[in-house]
Image (tube, rainbow, N blue to C red; front, side, top):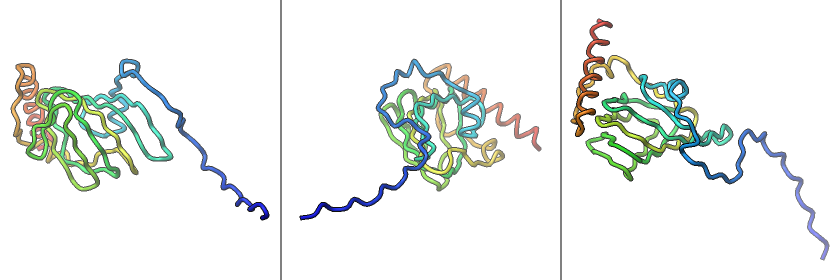
Length: 172
């Protein structure tokens, strides 16, 4: 039997990401605040550690740190995300989530998220954009639903609530 002819190989798309195996210590990746503001477009205070960014697959793997008292606005974005709580509390959709708990979000509005005692999460974004789209006035008018458990959290929640009220009055 004659040997089969092999079809010509297609040229691979330009590879902008190193797909080799890697194991990374979290302590070796710096927390970044400026990048998180550009990457996530959230109110100030959030920090990120980017472990992998693959522009071809449109995927970003990162840790995100929310300070005590932080409120993440109700929002949409052009990608889905899978979030695993690794430290602290994430309060969303009537649930008080703790380490090991999970959230999935897509392009439908979701949130607001409250972090009365601070929180760290591991998140994978995949899609056309990680930038959060939210309305500032609705965010500033947000009424807190969750109480902090720690004294430091209670102080931070009060400061954040006062800051949102002050910003709203300055807009008026």
